Length: 186
Image (cartoon, rainbow, N blue to C red; front, side, top):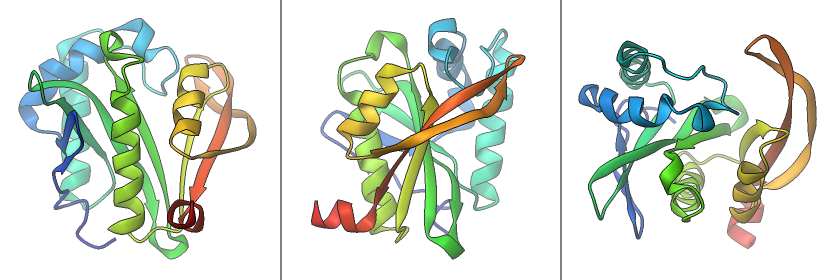
């Protein structure tokens, strides 16, 4: 996994370009991160000011600089619009394991874009990072994310009870994963 995140490559799918987040992306990030419906099941609070999004963008770009996993910006090819983020939020070289996360603008829900982005992230994880296991968690009430992860070949592994403390309460999370052997031998 050496040098993969400090030099995060640009990836392409049928409808999307996944590229590193850039400093000037804060306005586009604010457009989806300030939506309470988008933030409802996330670990981060809804962005109330543009400064909240600037802080997030700086956090992501600092992670790149430190060769630490972080999301790609998800760009819709047809409009060149940043519509969300997707990618690795943690990776453990010794265990050959990584975790992905994602968020997308509400007007692009249920159009297959995030499925494309997650599938491309999984492909990158197995082919480039040489991971053995890629996992994701989502809020136990987030049925849309559960369906998306299953559509991407991830298997439901169980409920992580009171796994996170978000917005003043403990939340149960669903755990999903796909193994290299499942991906390559499908």
